[in-house]
Image (tube, rainbow, N blue to C red; front, side, top):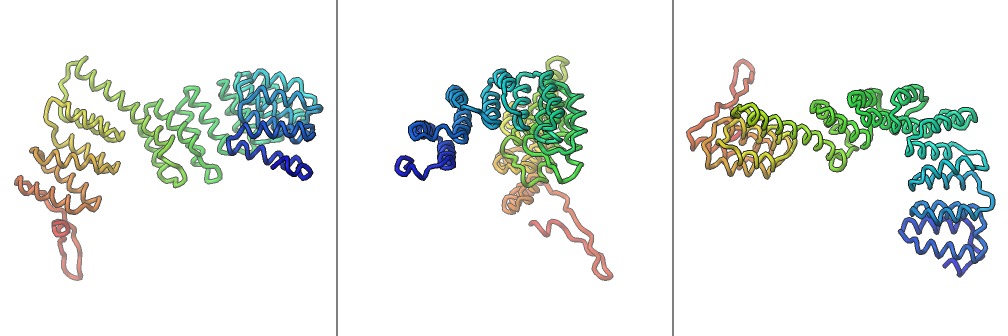
Length: 404
């Protein structure tokens, strides 16, 4: 199509064609366009050359990008910025900084952000500070939030937490990237309590800037490092209130990691109690272990633990697992429990909890089956009742009248 109507081609045509090649993952077509540009005489257009430069870096083709850059007669600020940014993103941070020092035109704020990114990769704090000073002196940055975020990231990567906090406080404008970067700075530096405090400040400051997935995952990782289930649960409750945050992906994995980390500690303490100190586990200890697995949503592990118990599990153990089934909505496990308990001699409390679990899911037939089992075993749950005042008399409503 390009060769059929050469007179109608301009740099916009070729730029859009290159974008289409990237979207369609068709680098071979881009090479054809490149060859056509050379043959048709359009290649000398700097707008097209910058587009080619950008395209090759998107495909991590540093060699082709370098050839394009060096073929540009008079690179403009876009050319230099694309080259520096591309080198940095492809892992050539030292070369990116070197190219910046050779720039023949005045950089803009995007150029400086690209250089700061390279400094972050190299943890070149001193040079990054020099870039900051250059930007201030040249009035290039002027409170630009993108530049401030890049500088904040540099401080974070270099472990300069005092500088990061000082910059954060002085920033005239802060977005979600600013907050998340500071949370990450503290978390990655091992200052997990401070990371959680920053997250709390972010939540409490209002609705203008809300934590995103990266913020939540970072603070959950901090909670896991601290071994703080309560803080993790607080973050979890915050996520539940946010309809725009997906729990199935990275956030869900972070929540599991919190619980699994605490589960590992729980297993270690349980084994130490038995093996190192010679304490024979009681039913309440087994109940704690099953409760721990259940809260973490590790139902198969809980099931394996139950089967491996040297004694028959009693009410508190089954009750802990049933409650976890209710909390996590695990009907498959609750069905296994019901089937297993049908042939076991268990207390009324466990069967009553199983009955209530079915009732809460509106599985009335299953709830009644458990009640029938209770009655067949000679067990009777004391009926709940409500006192209702109707005109001049007091009436008692028996809960057994509701579920028979």
